[in-house]
Image 1 (cartoon, helix red, strand yellow):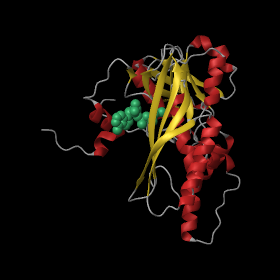
Image 2 (image 1 turned 180 degrees about the horizontal axis):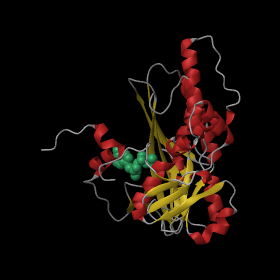
Image 3 (image 1 turned 45 degrees about the vertical axis):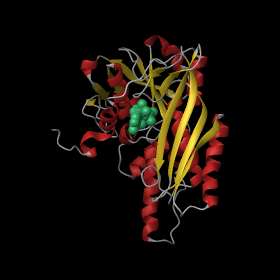
Image 4 (image 1 turned 45 degrees about the horizontal axis):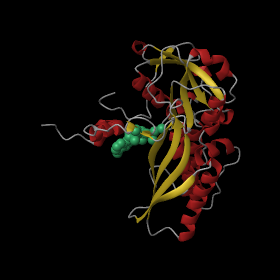
Length: 344
Ligand code: ADP
Ligand code: MG
């Protein structure tokens, strides 16, 4: 008989594989488990997209330095980012909360202020949810729904050898912002009269506290008639998402360190913390940017889209996942932000 495996041994994705291996789907489910969203039959020319995400106090957010309004906003952004990652358009969300007695009505109204602001900014509707008591703080679950044209849908699995690998925005900023917040929290814990020093860190703080989902990139791709061959949103860090795309597409990749987009302020903050900026870009996560691949023939069109960087290209599976460093060395990409499963 199997010895009792621990959660640590199997990792997050190993656990999902183990728990879900004996479930099947039928015809109206186009794609079940395994991508950013489930894909369901919807109309003659569109699919329905559905995705769900948890945010837990103490795991995903720290109330010491995160206003509830921001938590509400970010919860919605995290949910709909997965819809954009399928090249789709979010339409509705359902929000479930579990709340401990320490929260006042006013505090929860602030949470919903953030949720409402996000609904307005992204033109989506709150259509339901659930409310429960909790023993240990705040838990938020967001289910997001949307649609995508059948000719536009983009899975993680379609990357082809020679495709260009593209990233929106810049990476590592959210991790850098988190370092600043955690440092200031530690200072505050030492001296409750101290004021946090946050001036000069505006960009990285915005990246961790008020991230945005990249609907503009999905729009620009559409305008330029580009349907990516694969796409995923960057929640666990570039390396982890490259692993997902490469594994699901049966390919390898070669990226160039010097092309990975990193904001100047992120670089400055990393220097303060003695960190090579490429490390949080590869392994930091929570940037909510899009990683996607396009055919080589789309190069001229993709170059014209502001805020998209071509960071490398797709190679044969046998070549593995690699990064050419600034000094020209080949570095095997390892996914630190990623919980390796036995299957992968
Ligand atoms: P993302 O980071 O894009 O939100 P996840 O890594 O959370 O995606 O999940 C990967 C896939 O596994 C998704 O298709 C998701 O629906 C599925 N999944 C995650 N947890 C469970 C679970 N407990 N039961 C069934 N499916 C799950
Ligand atoms: Mg995702």
